[in-house]
Image (cartoon, rainbow, N blue to C red):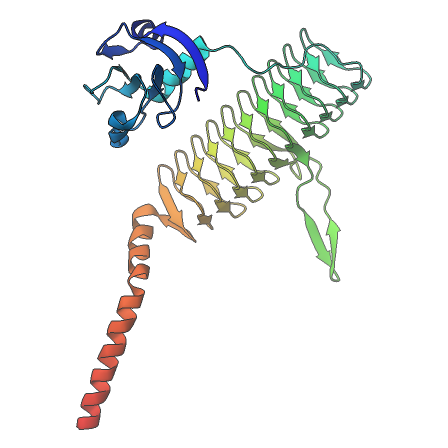
Amino acid sequence: MRSFKVRKTLKEIAEIIDGEVVGDSGIVITGISGIKEAGAGDITFLANPKYSAFIEKTNASAIITSREIESATKPIIRTDNPSLAFTKMISALTPTQIKHPRGIHPTAILGKDISLAKDVAIGPYAVIEDNVTIGEGTIIYPGCFIGHDVKIGSDTLIYANVSIRERVSIGSRVIIHSGTVIGSDGFGFVTVDGRHLKIPQTGTVEIEDEVEIGANVTIDRARFEKTVIGKGTKIDNLVQIAHNVIVGRDCIIVAQVGISGSTTLGKNVTLAGQVGIVGHINIGDNVIVMAQSGVSKSIPPDTMVWGYPAKPHETARRINACVQNLPRLYKTVEELKKKIEAREKNG
């Protein structure tokens, strides 16, 4: 089944994505689909040359590839970045399928002294408390809660059932998916005579421009000052970011990551799925933490780490290789032990 329907020649598509056609540029493309699902008339893409075998297996009529692919048995469009080119093509050739709310729904509950810029949309049963400022073109879906003194920039999209607590700041062109909570109390307690007494969390959260936050993410407010998510950072579903965390610009944080309080991430950091990070450490610029790693100490810039506790990738691989050999090593040791015992017995 085709995900999108179009009608363009391969030459026309190549012009849209600044690509080079190799093969019949006059074939007509009528659909866009993934490489495994594609059928006759579809165009698809191949981002990684190591999967080039799919070029021969796919039923697509044409493929967008990298410039490393010089030719194929079917027409291709060679590009500098196939993923980006495919995205650009979809944006240019397919209509927006999501119908966002428009205007202010009569069931929305608006507090006092609210500032709404031009073309703000607020869906049914959303609650906007006092002294909230919302920038031009921002869309708030049904069932959202926006606490008092919140500031939201322009062209931001907040999907259904998002909660944004008091005094939080959200930038422009931000996307927040359903079920996310921003500005909940940080997890702070002091134990006195066996009882856990709550420490007030008086700070806030600042989400900078062009951030995307997935579904059911929790970002806690700071104990003092602010928790910060840097410009351009993308956060997957089910991520927990604790109080006073600073996330740099253009980071990628994948599903089920947990970042403990007062940790700082530099720019362009990647945290793969289910990574856990202790508090009060620094993760340098361009660090990659591989999936399911446990980070217990600071990591210098431009480093790839893996494991539990996380170590430099090559070191972790060597340790893992040794661990995999433990059964064989155990068997060898047992055999040697028996030989030694036999020699001692025989004198």
